[in-house]
Length: 109
Image 1 (cartoon, one colour):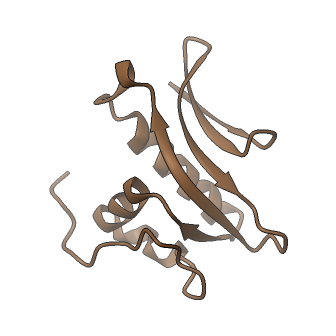
Image 2 (cartoon, rainbow, N blue to C red; image 1 turned 180 degrees about the vertical axis):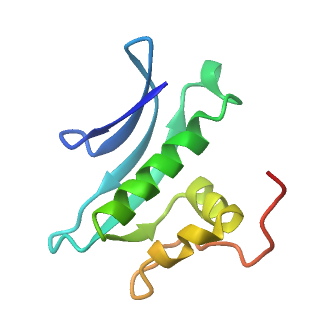
């Protein structure tokens, strides 16, 4: 699996054998100091293979590398951050989004 950032469509794409099988849809607001994640999608026949997890890690690492904050509306991303609290600092305190990170101990990996 390869992850590609597609600025034209506003998505991080999971590509398997040349086919997009999953994505995280994002939007960069006008001022560009943060990114909004709206949802994560994985084709049904590819679910359960860790694709959404790898997409999320890649996307969050990309935000960190660009020194951007996250406004999150995706429940999967919120759960991922709860399980990987090292990413919690990426969530924009002013505009956290509606999918808040659960306040719980990380699940076993």
